[in-house]
Image (spheres, rainbow, N blue to C red):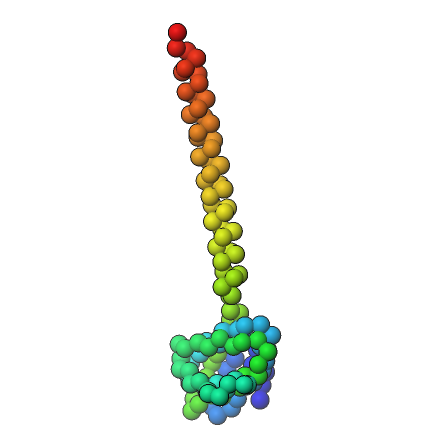
Length: 122
C-alpha cells in the first residue's frame, strides 16, 4: 500500500490500494477510473468515478482502492470557507479603497472648481 497524500497526483493500479492520513483538508479528484474509499470512523464507504471528488477530513485514516482499471487521482488542498471569505473581503476592501480614493480626488477637484467659481461672482 502506498502513501495517499505524499504527492499531488497518484495512479493506483487496478485492485491495489493507497492509504494515508491527511494533515489538512484535501480534495481527492478522480481523473480516471473508479475508486472505493473507506474512511476511519465512518460506517459507510464511497464509490467515486472519473470526474467525482471527495473531501478528506484531516486526522483520519483513508484507504482508496482502484476498481477494475487503473485509477488516477489528483490531490488539491481544500480552501476553507473562512479563508475564502477573508480573501474576498481583502479584495473588496482594496477595490473600494482604490475607487474611493479616486472618487475623493474627483470630489475635491470639483469642490475646488466650485469655490473658484463662487469667488469669481461679483
